[in-house]
Amino acid sequence: MWPIAAKPQLIRGDTGDAVRYLQSVLRFRAGQNVEVDGTFGPATETAVESVQALFAADVDSVVGPDTWIAIDQLAAGIGLRRAHGIALRSSRSLRG
Image (cartoon, rainbow, N blue to C red):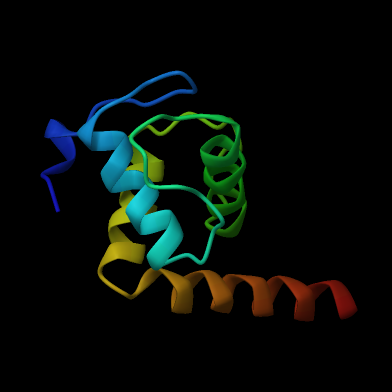
């Protein structure tokens, strides 16, 4: 993992190693259907939005500091448990 300050903001159309790292985490830790090709395209954008929604972040498809924190948690293997807990609490509160 890179220090958060070293991670660039990523948007659709970006390319490079940071995108490749993002895609690897999305594919292998979050189970998203993205190719690890280093190009931030439509599939990567959709996967980012899914992760943002799970982590109660702004769903804007921009990979900024808050989204990088979620990605790093996923990479460390702790993010899905946290996101799953948020989803469970949210669904319980909706049921009353």
